[in-house]
Image 1: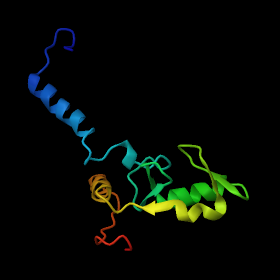
Image 2 (image 1 turned 120 degrees about the vertical axis):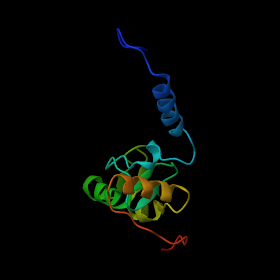
Image 3 (image 1 turned 30 degrees about the vertical axis):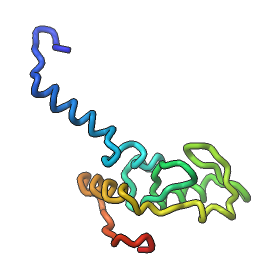
Image 4 (image 1 turned 45 degrees about the vertical axis):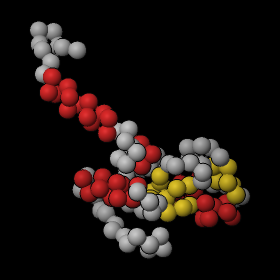
Length: 122
């Protein structure tokens, strides 16, 4: 839409459309790559449970220590309940195509990054 008395530049419109399309590409950073606890691209990304939502590992550990009762912890997004004794086993390190995207976003923002080898055990 053109502003009152103004005109849209078609080149600006094309540039903005490309940015919007980038958000939906499977190999670009999107909301699933931003930790819902810290609202940042995680330094040490992990998956918690069956969702594809990425979390910052330390933020999850802090969340669990501050919100769990003696036996259970509630997932902050899905609200699923996990036994506290099983909790450490449900965090899965992110070592797939998402890791370089997340680290690139951290670097773009001037945040600390971790470079890892391809081994999932680094």
